[in-house]
Picture 1 (spheres, rainbow, N blue to C red):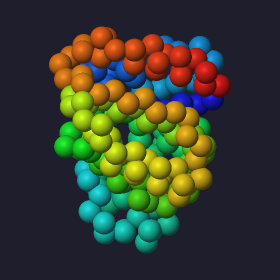
Picture 2 (cartoon, rainbow, N blue to C red):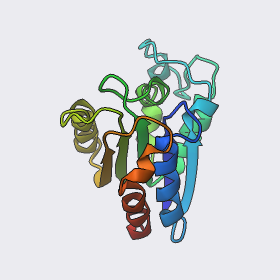
Picture 3 (cartoon, rainbow, N blue to C red):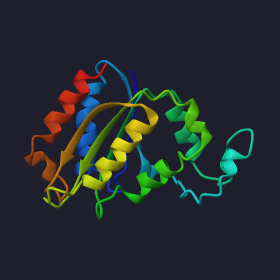
Length: 178
């Protein structure tokens, strides 16, 4: 299976990156897996002009690296969204990419499954509720299969995730994907 992981952390080597690497280690055994660290791509936010709906190529007028992301998404069967949680939402870098998928190009994507990895410093039970609701709406709207969720609370400083079972859980999830 062709898997793309969009890692939304702006912090290299942080808890989200460690979670993504654990999943990658498990999934790479039976799949073609690529990690895209979104902080490495300059992606401008969608401005809702709908110009992409009005031209034959469906291209966005903004001159950034989103075309590279579209190309990767067009080949992907399983998309993993991984993000630290700031103020009950995804990282702004990842949200910019998701918003830019408001483009008819998405109709050519081969994505069949979606997975969600969230990491937050707070331990509040409702910490991920708003993101999970958005995730469920996307699953429903695009008729995607839920490939799994890994939700990690109470990890603030780099490496805190090592004190949980989340890395093992991510690796096992990756091993089960094929």
